[in-house]
Image 1 (tube, rainbow, N blue to C red):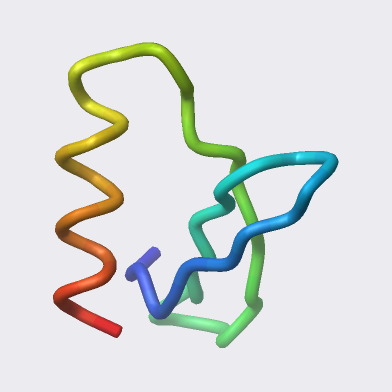
Image 2: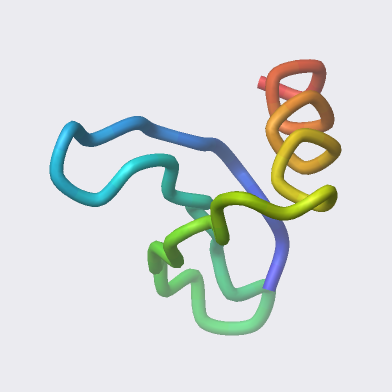
Length: 49
C-alpha cells in the first residue's frame, strides 16, 4: 500500500487514501486525532499531494 492522497470529511475528519501496489485497489483510513502523529502525518501528506 502506498499513500496517494488525503481528504477531509466533516463527519469522518481526515482520511488517508492509499493504493495497493500489486492490484491497484484504492482504500481509505481515518487519521487518528488528538495525537502528536496527527499533525506530522497531515503535514507530510500536504507536502506530498
